[in-house]
Length: 372
Image (tube, rainbow, N blue to C red; front, side):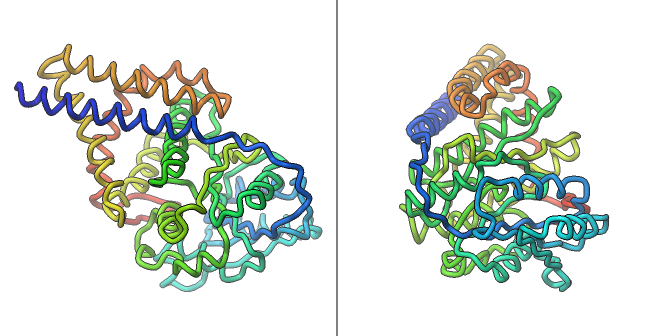
């Protein structure tokens, strides 16, 4: 039993130091304040879609309302075998908004279908006419200065890839807990980029130079994995251009995406995310994930074998996460969500332990498909 406590102490120190390092990485990212530049980059906004009839119109409306010259961007929608009214809704929108350059492409090859979202993105990039690609999702919403803010940041920094902030929309407690947790993941991803050890990002708001995509050979080596269309690409670009990948810390660049409405949706999403955890070329990422998993496991084991010791581990977890999340949620104007943290911890620990194993076995549902 004494060995369990020694191991648990080491794991606790590891976890606290890890989150502290991420906190330092986050707070040292300077908030971006644009200079009033009048120059423009040209963008191809890629939106892979599959059965998005209920949300795609609002996404396109937000893009069309951007305070940015329409001649400097195009919208490319890649339909990935939708079975609902998605194509009909998109065509109606295109007919009613002829001032914006919107293209609809369709995936038709069964071999490509098995490659899922990565194939759709690759197909979209091949049809892009502009120098910079912006990846986003059909269920995303954004403010009118989104594109302008990205444009200024790229011009002023001269970088090859930019990870811009993403937030979950939330109305009820279940969604607010998800929003709080997801904000933490965005903060960790941003901090990791800042300390030159990138781990995660989101294709809901990811920008990169088109030529760089081909330089790193796109998703080659990872195209058989259902998830990771964002992170694997970022790791490739960072490996070639370590000083040219940045996080855009500006509220006007935030895109808002839908939280999961059910436990099943949440489980399938997290299984998809975690399923790539053993596929990273950089093993330090996998090592960190394993360390965090063992820390959460040690909390549960100690709560049953030495309740007070386990409780102290839980207090340490809550304390360091509160410090980190306060800074991140402050950026997203969601500090009140911290009130849910103590109640969400045990749920969070249990789903980490379950999903961490479950994600590497069997299949899960994604956009109406069963994938591994």
